[in-house]
Figure 1 (cartoon, helix red, strand yellow):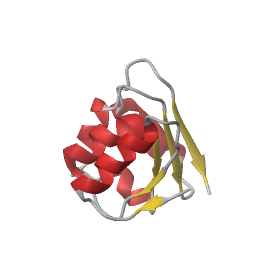
Figure 2 (cartoon, one colour):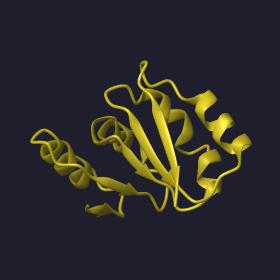
Figure 3 (cartoon, helix red, strand yellow):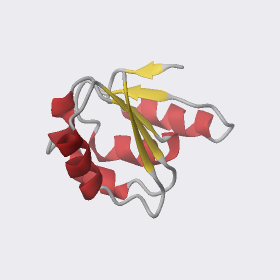
Length: 103
């Protein structure tokens, strides 16, 4: 699966186009992607976290509440149940299920 390292509008536009033909992507975020990135994430539906600390990043966490078009699959380092519960309590993804796995 391709890994996205940068926050460039062209990258997200490409992801949207490929997603429409059934491609699946894994987004590896080195920093918060911004609102445009989360518009794309709503279609891509998978997010890889590099560290548990990213769960509480105020730069992008509120934007996740806008993810409504697909279930969000999160791959993350080992997390405490408190981290997971706190994170899930902030999500509103339109009735879909947030799935988190540990590496």
